[in-house]
Length: 127
Image: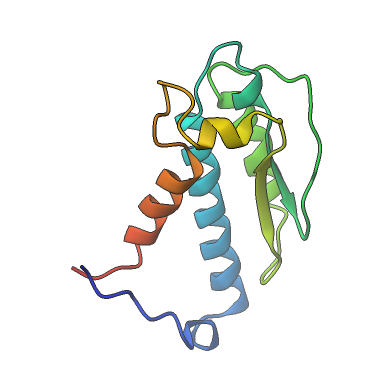
């Protein structure tokens, strides 16, 4: 197993602008990952991913987005408003989301969030 990259003190070495840019880039990658890994039947689940800053959004919409493009564009616009050290939330509040994350869909047999997080974590590990 690869050693984990130690991020301790990294925030002290970076400027506030660099912290903001890294956080936004990671959030955009996470958003893209979960949206594009989401199973698509009607497009409603894919269209219900929301990004918010400084707290959860908690909403459910009637949005339908089979391609994921509009959902990602809307989320990126929100993520770009985040300042340094603000929490960026990415969530999907449809009630069947946990079942999909648990592998209920053949289109996403290992979920979306866990897979995306594992992919992001590999960016911070050493081989």
